[in-house]
Image (cartoon, rainbow, N blue to C red; front, side, top):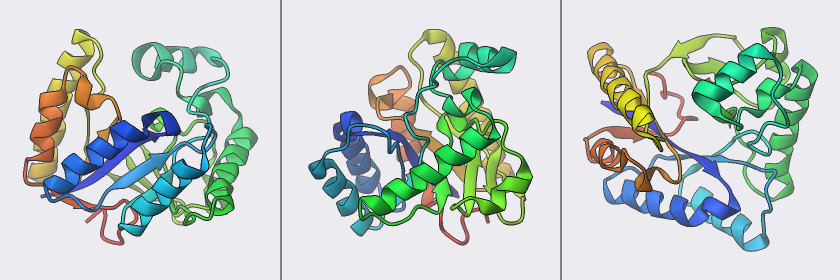
Length: 233
């Protein structure tokens, strides 16, 4: 079985945890990894060199919002999303279509300004794309966008649904929900013979589902990068 393994929230303040996760993945045969980089943080020259080193190792760098923090809560849907899922990180939900498009273009430009490979993959924080009409997708500097349900092709507008598991459980309620969710999603991937998306956050190795995370890492999945031409097959 195949897996698209991504590490979220790659920022200067999370690089040590990200480094540890990469080592755990590589020690278990997972060299195809996608890092979701948050450009609008306080990046220093040595941090950029670390990203460049990972890229040189064959690790994909994808764009992941700008600040990874919503400026404010906008409307009932955002309020519900924040309370149940995203807390204060779904920054797209606080923006209109023009603001989302501007953020996504700026996020891509940052990589080139730092001398890093231009990202072809984009993942909005909390997988929440927000109010961005499909007609605007082809103008974006990305080939694919990951949302909760799967991968969007920005040129065709097609959604490839893919199961998703996560481990960001800092309360017992979240741990109970995610453990059940992950079991269902992994079973779905196996039955349908579809790639499983394994979304990892930097602190997951220290939270309540740390053992579950290591079980997935050691579970015999064959990893692929998100930008692999065969990623969804």
